[in-house]
Length: 168
Image 1: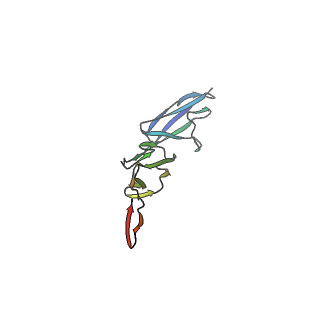
Image 2: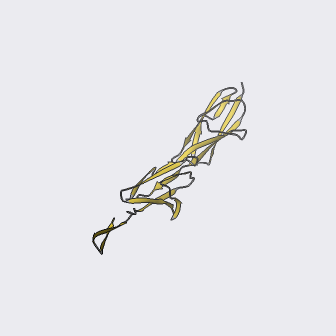
Image 3: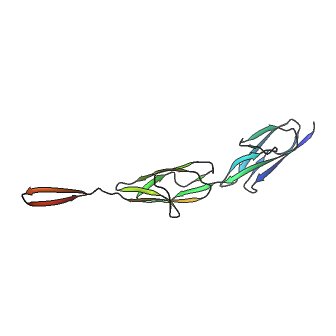
């Protein structure tokens, strides 16, 4: 049996590490396991032929000297700023770039939802908002006092005398 070298490379460096590499005998079963550092996650392997795999762990039979690259990415933090005029589900968490984030706004009684804002720019005016992000975001939900729908009523009790009553 010959000796096979299974090398591991971390991309980008310092985002994590992997175990299972080293010198192996031909036809040995090899298991490579990635470990991400804080606020990072395993994305994929880049195999010696240039293809990718998301297997975790990655298991294969050693046949030739090869280098396996483990790729990590940093989570994006989605922070929803607090607003006493309503609540938003889906606040303050870390997400992968491939994940879909869904926020749901619920105004308190007497208020309506205006929209989700990022750096003063409107992202969506829908109370249910789904998106993907690769960056940290501080999202501001905005609410406004509800329009009470003022009603104008004319009451005629005395001939030639009208009283107008405004009902909130």
